[in-house]
Image (cartoon, rainbow, N blue to C red; front, side, top):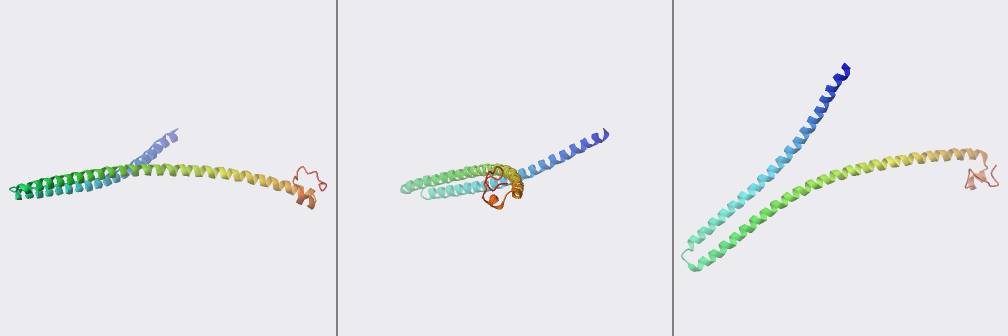
Length: 181
């Protein structure tokens, strides 16, 4: 009884250590994935900041142009058109960047799904290969037993039959030919 009581805490402790090691491994994987996502987020934030700076620069350029041609009525129409075009370009660029961000997120999710499917397929292939190997081994074992049985029968019949009979006969066990003994 005392020996069994001592084994239980050791087994629980080893199971706990395995669980802790597995949890640590998962935490490391999650930490790495979080780090990658943070890097991607930082890159996207840089792109957004750069775009916002470009927007500010373009707006500043538009303001300067508007101040220069403030007094000229003919140039005002041109400035209004230019400003609308710039705003449309910036709006399109912002939309394009948002679309690229959405596509990057979609690609990330697709890659994760593909990785999961690949892992599942590998497991299925391994299980199928193992099952086929077992079936082949059983078939080979059965065939080798049949060959051994046939060899024994041939050896037995070889001792009783003539050479002509052995070469020509198709049914050694139930032969009724004139060469049989």
